[in-house]
Structure formats: structure tokens, C-alpha cells
Length: 426
Picture: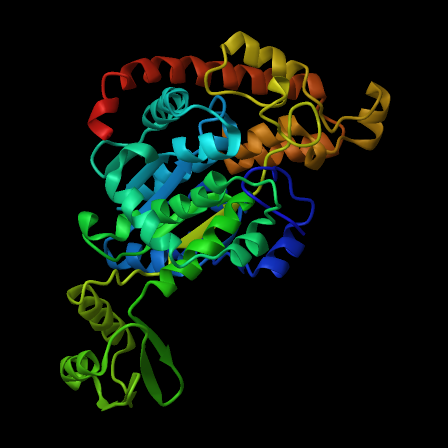
């Protein structure tokens, strides 16, 4: 299976995806966190990498961040709203939200001039504010205007090689150097919340579609490579291996760890017998690393949501305007798209009543399931009535269109209000 952030926008088998790329099953979030988001309850978010770290921080009231970048190549649409909704939810749970307008990636991968990308990017940011993201606990930026980010990307790129990029992204000979370098910028985006500028290491989660997983695999590897120490454990001891530190630094660190267990210093590592508190040892390692000029990064986490189907059938495509609902659509235009959408209905009215519809193949039902209805009983009733032949496609289309028109009218009004606030978020 091949996935990449620039050409993948549909997945046929999510089970195979998880198996091949090592994406973990999602824990029962609703049992772990109060006010679980409906995307988790309905398993629209289906997998994760290390999200347990963020859950733990939420439960303890510890600091954590959520981060996402938007490549401004077209209008923000309901697919982007899935990420925005998660960012707003995570902020409400105590997280600081970082949002990058990926103008450098837009230029490198899609040849969109950076000034144009920044202008398009404002539409994404305005929609995010209109949907409910608060100024307090938010940090918006354009990639090309963040000098500290570019410095971090340059340092990270020293730990990335061509063979790795080819393996992860499937790059071929015609890929530009700029597009290759944009992968380091993406890694810097994800690690940026953990830099000294924003208070140092902390759990960070990136809500994403599965097409973004290559970025996550790269940044998780790179975040380890730039560490000064590697912490390992087995049943009887913890081992702190030096990646850059010298013997004198190891001896100095051993003294700091003296209360953590019986420590022994070797040429390139420290062993701690019968360690007492693993979390405390990892914390002390990061703190010492920061004192020595390192980063002490915690491997970033991610969650993955399913792709929505296109309204015209098959995949949703930014190049086919009728296949998606833009957050900038005129409400009447959105209604027309929904009324013309492909459904899971049968070919004739009599067959629909006799055999029932197929909501699992219906783009209109997905609108209810992903975005329009929060009430579980209402969603279940639509599903059951459809498969029993008691609900016709025209009814669903009109109801979905009415919900969307109301949402877009309100969203348009809130976007106008957000224009007065945007600069405060940057």
C-alpha cells in the first residue's frame, strides 16, 4: 500500500492500513475522557500513534499541545472541518493549539506562490475561528515567516537522508529539492510546540487523515535522532545511552540520578538497577538534556480519521468542485450539490421500498454521520429507516441540504466577525 500527503485521498482497507504501517487501535476514549468527541464515539477517528500520552496529560491536567498544518491549495471544506473540530475539542480539554499555514509546502509541492498561499490560508484560519477556536491557547503562523521554525527545520534536515525520504514518501527522480526539504519543514512544524520558545518538551498530538502518516513516521524518527540520550528499559534495569554526550557528562548525570536507583556509569551509557520511578527518570533525562543544549523532544502523537466520500461518488477531490462542500460555499449552491449527490438508494422507488437503501454507500448519509447530527438516536433512526425501505433519498437530501444551508449561513456570519480577530491569533 502506498500513501503520501500529496496524492492519497481515499483508502479502501483501513484494517490493512493499520496492519502495514503499525497504526494502533484507538483506546476507548469515551471511557478515558469526559465529553468525548463524536468522531471518536462513531469511530470516524479509527487509529492513533501514542495518543495515550495525550490522554494521560489530559487526565492529570498536565500541559499538552495539538498541532495541524493546512496546505492552502484550495478552499477549506468539510474534510478540513474534521481536523478543525478536533483541534477545538482538544483546546477545550486544556491543550494549546498550533496552526501552520503551509505556504512553503504549497509552493514546493503544488507550485502555488507563497503570497497567494498566505492569502488562501487566511480562509482556513477564519473558518477555524468561526467554528469556535479561542484566541487564548492558540498560535497561528505562516511557515515562511517563522524564523525559529526554519532554523529548527535546517537542524532536523541534518538527520534526514535521501534513502529515508524515498522509502517513506516514494519520491522519484523528478521530485524537486524544495519538495524534499518541505518534509523537514513539516517535521519542524510538529516539533515546534516543544521548543524552548513555547516552554519545552510536552506531549503533542496531530489530528490527521491517513495521507499525513508519512509525515508522522518521519518526525517520530527524527525526534529521537536529535535527542542527546536514548532511554531504554527491561525487567530489571533502565539504560540511558549517550548519543552525543561525553563521559564527563555521563558522570555528572549519574549524580543527578543518584536518588533514582543504583547507578553505574559505562563508556557510553548509564545503567540503573531496580529503578524506582520510570517517569521521573525520563523527566530528569529530558531536563539534563535541555541544560546541555539539547531539545529533549517527546515523540509526537497522532490520531487518524477516515476520508469522506465525494458527493459525486468515489473519492472527494479538490479538483472536482461538485464532489465536496466548501466552507465558503453559498448556501444555495451547497443545497444544489446535495440534491445532485450520489446516494445509496436503489434504481427505482419500488426497489427502494422492497430492498431498502444502502446508507454505508451513501454520501448524504455520511453528511449526517460525520457533521450534521450529534444526536445518536437521530443518526440511528435515519440508518434503520433507510435499510428498511421506509426513508427515500429525496427526504434525506432535503434534510441534509436544510441543515447545511443553516450551518453555512451562520458560518459566513461568524467568519465576518473573525476577520476582526485574526491578527490576535497570529
